[in-house]
Amino acid sequence: MAKDGDLRTLTRSVASGGGSAFFQRIAGRVSILGFQVLLSRSLGVETFGLFAVAQSIFKMAHGLLSTGPMHAIVRFVSSRSERREWAEAKGRTIDGFALSVGLGGVAVVGLGIALQLGGRQLFGDTDVAIAALGLLICLPAYNALLLLSGLSRALGFVHLGIFAYDLLRPLLVIAVVGFVFLFRASLMNAVLGFVVATYLAVIVAGALVRRRLPSEMRATRAKHDVPGVVRYSLLAAVSGIGLIVLSRVDRIMLGVMVGTTAAGVYTAASLAALQVTLGMKSIEASFAPQIAKLHAAGRKEDLADLYAVTSKWILSMTILLTLPLLLFGRPILAIFGSGFAAGALALGVLAAGQLLRASIGCSAQLLLMTGHQRLEAVNNIVLVGANLLLNVLLIPRYEALGAAAATAGSLLLLTGLRFVEIHRLLGLSPFCREMWKPLVAGIVAGAAGYVVTRAGMRLPFELLVGGSVVVLAYIAALLALGLDEDYRDLWRTLVRRRGLSRE
Image (cartoon, rainbow, N blue to C red; front, side, top):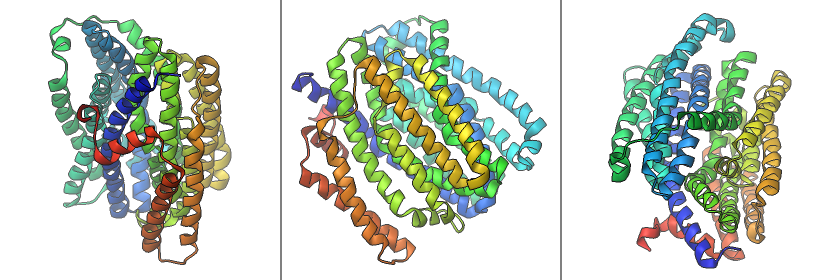
C-alpha cells in the first residue's frame, strides 16, 4: 500500500483536476445538448437524422485521425516535462500536431471525393453527402483543438485543456448556429454555423494555450522523433477506434438500413446516454497524466491505490447519472421534440451499457499510458468486429433497440477484456472495500425514483420531481453509509471548487 500522505496528495491532485473538468464538462455538455435540441426542434426528426448521420461521418474521421496523436502528446509530454526534457516535449508536440492536422487535410480531400461519387447511392439522399462534406471542411481545425486540449492536460493545465475542447467549442457552436437560425433554420445553416464556430474556437484556444506554455519549452530547440510519434499514434488510434465506431457507426447503419427518422430518434437517445460518462471523462482528464508519471517512476503501489480510489469515484458519479435515464427516459427524450420519446427503451439499454464500461474506471488510459497500446488496439479491433456483427444482426429486426443492444453487448465484452488484462499484466484492480456503498445507495435511490414513476405525473413534472428525488435519496444514502476521506476530498473540490493551491 502507498503511504497515506502520498496517496492523499495524489487523490487531491486528481480530484482538483477532475473537479475542474467536471464543472466545465457539465457546462459543455449542456451546451452540446442545447445545440442538439435546437436542431431537433427546429428541423424535425427526419432532417435532424440527416444532420446526425453527416455529423457521425465527420466525428468518426476526427476520432480516427486525432485520438492517436493526442494520446501521444499526453504520454510523451507528461513524462518528458516531469524530467524537464523540454526539447523532447516540444518536438513530440510539433510532431503530433503535424501528423493529425496533415492527415485531416488529406481526409477532407479523400472523403469529399468519396461522398460526391457514392453519397447518394449509399444514403439515398444527397443532403447527407453535402452536409458531411461541409462539416469535413473544419476537420483540420477540429483535430488541432483536441490536440491543444491534450497538450494543456499533459502540462498540468487540466482546466484549460477541458475549456478549450469541451466548453469553448460547444458554447461557440450553439451561439453561432443560434444566430444563423434567426435568419433561417435549415440543414445547411446548421453546417455553416458548426464550421465557423470550430475555426473561431481553435483560434481562441491556440492563443490561450500558447500563453501558458513553459518558457523553457518555448525557448528550446525542438528534438523530433517522428517515427516514434507515428508508431505510437497509429497504435493508439487503433486502440481508440472501438469507442469511435461504437458511438457513431450505429447511427450511420440505422440511416442506411432503416432510414434517417430512426437515426434521428436513436441519436437523441445516444446523446442522452453518453452523459453517463461525464464522471469518468472528468476524472480521466487528470488521471491519465498521473498514470504516465507514476508508471515511469516505478510507483506501482501508488498507481494501484489511486486506480481503486478513482474507480470508486467514477462508479459513484456514474450510478447517479444513470438512474434518471433508466427511470425517466420518455420525459428526457421528449425535450428533443415530438416523436423522440419512442427511443426511451433504447436509451435505457445504452445507459446500462455505459454504466458497465465505467464500472472498472479509467481502464483504457491505464493500458495506453503504461505501454500496452498494442493490446488495447487488439481489444478495439475485437470490439469493432463484435459491434458491426451485432448491428447487422439486430438492426433489421429491432431497429433502434437493436442498435442499442449491439452497443451494450459490445461494451460488456470490452469491459471483461480490459478487466482481465489489467489484473494479469499490471496486477491492478478497480475494486476496493468501500465499493459497496455507491451500489447500495443506487438501489435506495432507484427504489425512490420508481415510486415517482408510479405516481402518474405528467411528463415535465415527473422528470423534475423524479430527478430531484433520485439525487437527494442517493446523496442521503451515501451520507448515511459514511463518506470516506477520499470522498471528502472530491466533495471539497466539486462543491467548494478548492484545489491544492488553495489548501
